[in-house]
Amino acid sequence: MKKIISPLVLLSVLMFSCTSNEEPEEVVNCQEDRNKVNMTRFVKSDSRSNDVINSYSYNELNFLSSRTRNSLSRNFEYTYVYDCSNNLVEMQVDETKDPQYDGSDYFYTYDNQNRLIGFSNSFQGESDYELTYNGNVVSATGTIGMDQNTSVTLQLNSQGQVSRLDRVNDLGFEDQVIYTIFEYDSNGNLIKVEDFDKEGSLKYSIRIFYDNYTNPYYDQFKSIYLQRFISLFYDAGYWAADRFSSDDFYFPYLKNNITSIKDTLCNACYPEVVKRDYNYDEVYPQKFSLSYWGAPGTETEIEYYE
Image 1 (cartoon, one colour):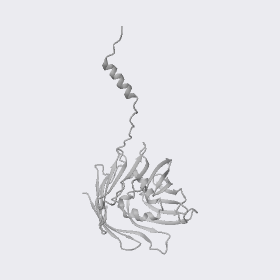
Image 2 (spheres, one colour):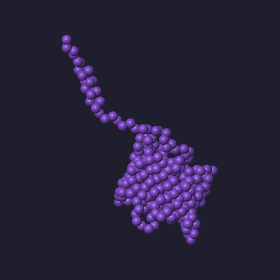
Image 3 (tube, one colour):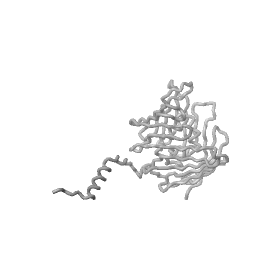
Image 4 (cartoon, helix red, strand yellow):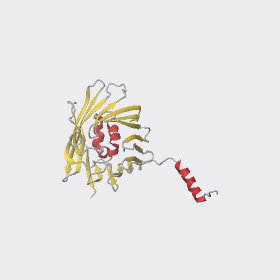
């Protein structure tokens, strides 16, 4: 007696046969509590006496989601996109005042351990590099700061902070900084940066001083710490003083507020490269003045979400 196979069974077999040969979907390792923001008060805006106004908004998990930066000459809108593990995966930048200027978009990729393994941006090939990990050593290789086929090596301490940065390529000029050493205090604040040349001689040295109040820009962008560190310190540690003292959300990894940055080698110079004076409420700064090399600087007033 012949066995009759019903069309329904045959269809089920065929469908199973087809789907069993398909590639399995990649499993995304979502960690929803990763990079959690522990701050309880958030900056709504900061207004500077040089007519620069920054406004900020946050998502339901208190991650920075957008920023507008308006000035007399340029207006920028920043949009921050996160994945399911709260890793920043894209920063979109648009220039809204003058269409002849193009914004640059920034892209970040991660491995299944949620480690940053790639960074690129769309601004004239400025950066496009990969990161690899070997214990407490991280290497970044590719285009960094418009230098092609270059690399840096980062050594991390037990807290995951960069304690040494080596610039692998010798660019051939006399004053090139080959490696930089970093030191931190018990709060995790960066307190010393020392640059050395290829002979191992100390070229630059700065000390960074802080108050005991909470930095209101702290605790954001944890997933891209290494990219921000490379961006700041790729050329030399000394020259980063201006950037991370003037754009607080660019390096939001300092728990307290910078009060001064001092050049410890240049005896003939004005001792304070950067100086900040604050007015506080009970915990946070409300207003501060910023000056360089003793010259008159800018006043900034901070507004918070209630």
